[in-house]
Image: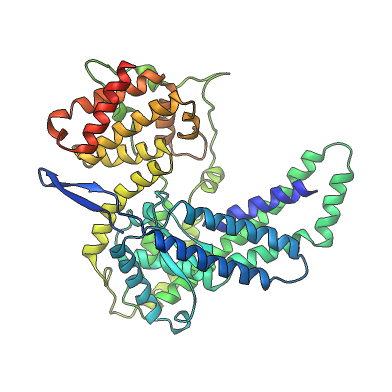
Length: 465
């Protein structure tokens, strides 16, 4: 019975949770300064962990007696997730970025006296996933991968208001309470007993029960999204932000998972060297019994895999209220357009660095290739490609490469799956040969850049081993 409850609990937690500019070196090539990641504020992470633990303990002390063990298990899972986020230093701690985000939040708070006494803190997350989330203990994360895709500050404000609404309306706590009540209800316990006592077909019966529970939790989760949208719009009222940005933001989110990067053609251009020519087999997918798995997608599956489902429905529900919240004094960028754009540029680099620092070489490479399309001669980006290929060579040599690159799957975008397939096809000598010969073409231009020279020298050693 414990396994059954664990499956359901894990599903619910997934649905609850999902919903500092860097510096640039003085060395320049042309007019482009070289990016280097911002330093981390270790003291901030320590204090945040301490504060969050106090909140967690206070939540445990306030739990109801009925179903307390279930509550404690779920809150413990949430606390473990928060510790992991803090432990991995996901929050971006550069002062200028924190001050800018605080300025956006302050604009919202000034217009909403009811928020001024609420204990929540907003941070930029170094994740490249285009999302934002309230993760519990008063912590709201605004992913760089989303912020860098926005059109203006008003869209950023709506994202913040939406996550503040989840916190303000206690959606996470309410979802946990509903789950515990459902799991301890007489009807659910009887259903679980019947499954346990059944001699045959337990798996089918459990699948049916989970499917029904999944449908209900997803429906309530999406109801929470609409509630948060409405409350977010109310929070934006009397601010200087343009309320119509709520609709443009949702329109953006509806298509934000679309992947237009033709990764195979990029790979062939990047990695076709005279002394190490590109091989078509690296990007040729096989089908059949032992080949790649082809996933049949339908509209319902496609929407369920979206980072932000139901956006068109949310737009339809929100649109009639927009005009009532317009005051005539709005601005799309009332705080600082210049700082907004500066952070967007920096964040596109930071997600590359953070993915690499967390040993996700494939994701770091994907972000790098995407940005290289806009900045083909950027020294940091060129070096990043060589760094990933050298690191893949080392990881393969140490038999840990499987822990450093993702596997292709239905939850990945087409372009990223293509890159993962490419990385899966390479032999250990290919990582060294491809990376070294790629860097070699930039040697005359970037040899004064220490990070570039380090990777070039490493690549040369690896090709001789």
